[in-house]
Length: 230
Length: 244
Ligand SMILES: [Zn+2]
Image (tube, rainbow over all chains, first blue to last red; front, side, top):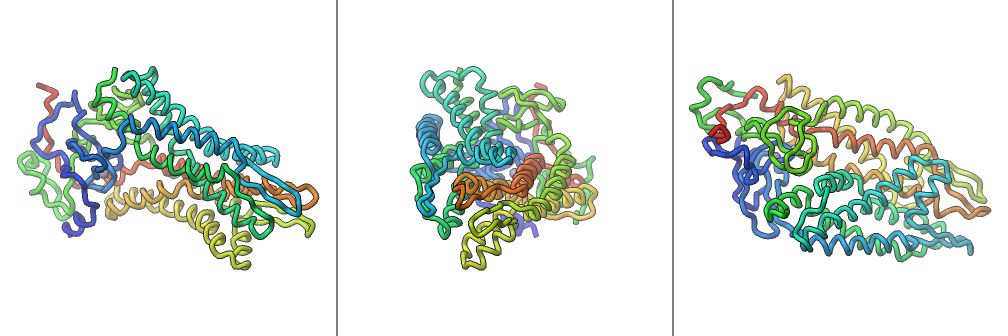
């Protein structure tokens, strides 16, 4: 029975062991400890090799990882921001029904819901695909630029990182991309569909956002603490 | 399922390996009088709920406050909204051929009948199957946690943890149809030829997505483990050096 439990758990990349009986630790300096977000089990941190992840032996959740450093994250955020601007400045798709042309941007699609009297849906689209992703990227820049260029923590970094964590749950660019693709297939039989620049830009943006969000907010905190930025 | 209740008095001398449990109970932050910050992951010395993290100043909670009550409330609200989301029309199409109102299911049936199996499947999975799966898993987790806390039934906690991770992962994907409806509304506005507008079902559907996401965010997976070990906790703790 016990064997079954332990073998079904994901293999840990590192030799991470939970805190054992008899191990001494100092509650005033817990920076060498890590805690599982999902089951609360406490571990002693071990140094990981680049690209490795540490998993919880109890529940299998990811504990922390040694992924991209903050100096590698900054260019990814800047690139994402450029593609975010392109994605919103150009039409996603153009349709042609017997010579009647019609095109829309992301903001146009959100606005259409306001005109159609479905404001709650318009707000939802606006927040999840425009406001939250944009503010996450801007806040990341606000945090990363001072850290990378001047080795200092920006004022209000704690607040900014907390907001980023909340926004991350609600940003849905990649879901929107699939939504656009479904719309294209839906319309294909009815009208002539011409994909716009923003569609390709959204695809690239989705990939970059995956890379950006692979660095968790807790990873940013850990690295800031490790390097002891003022 | 517990074979032996721990003897709390003698447990100081016994190492965790000797305690006869079905699973080994590792030390949690709570056992060690630590609180992990939900925002930055920093382990703070135990204070009462409502104090702030010393690293990022977020409010600390040992467990998410009123987690189960909030999750129940949000989930039931989502169940109620799931009904109009499926019964009310998502889109209304006006064209030269007349006007037509489509619910999610009638849209799926339409695409299936016109041999567009891929679109039909995507809409069915994202808009009907995923929200229903989310609601069913959340209900199961809430019941599992309740029964574990009263020691009536002990589902394997690691399987509950996997279910929770599934809910977290699929949460956002049911927004697909809301995006599709808003794109259609924006694109098909060719006055005399055809217009598509969003129906009241779109609002209800958006509400289902938001409510289920809030429900899974307010669920604290650590409660699964707390309740599982409630009747089987070894208390031999590592030594804290704070008193030195
Ligand atoms: Zn864990």
